[in-house]
Amino acid sequence: MYRLIVILILLGIFYWVVKRAFFPPKNRVAGPREDGEEMIQDPVCGCYIPKSQAFTLSDQGKKVYFCSHLCSQKYQTSKTLPKD
Ligand SMILES: [Zn+2]
Image (cartoon, rainbow, N blue to C red; front, side, top):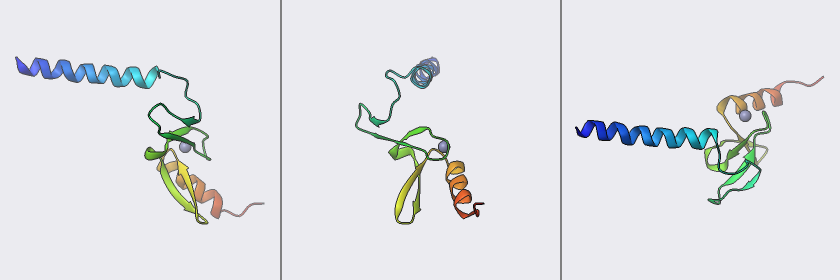
């Protein structure tokens, strides 16, 4: 019987997470969020990510933030590739 309760709780959490992911309570804009978490823009794909979840890279002493490892790799590749 208690397994059913656990499943119901998990479903509730899952539903909440999905709801939050697809229907954010407020417009996603740059700047401080309700919880004070700073949002930063990924220079590669242009999306916004919470600073604590971002992938960081040091570029000439400057910290650059990315949404994913892939974006940081793309950034590095574009830096090292010679420009025409
Ligand atoms: Zn990105």
